[in-house]
Image (cartoon, rainbow, N blue to C red; front, side, top):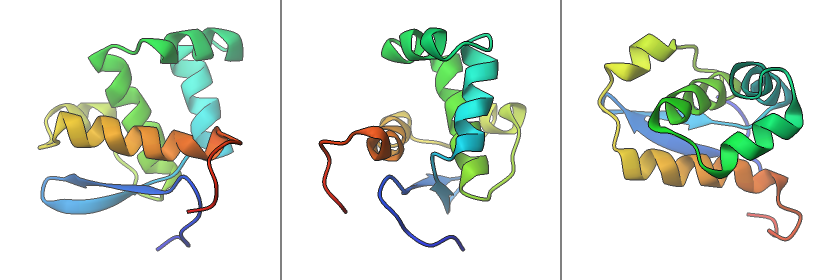
Length: 102
């Protein structure tokens, strides 16, 4: 289990709580998969993500939290979309300097 820090979130997937964490590795994965290797492209894509993007984002954040899964496995998982969006937002809050410690 990872130590809790600002930006950590949890999401119930297939009935089990899984940790989400925005790490440098997760950001690098997102930059490669959604930004075509360019951080500016990634920022633009994250402004209006598609559902397919959310699955890729979830996979990267889950990996950052220590839970290895695939995009294909997530596609067939039981995940509440609203809870997923909220957990993703909490994970990305670690990038916001305006957000105080949790």
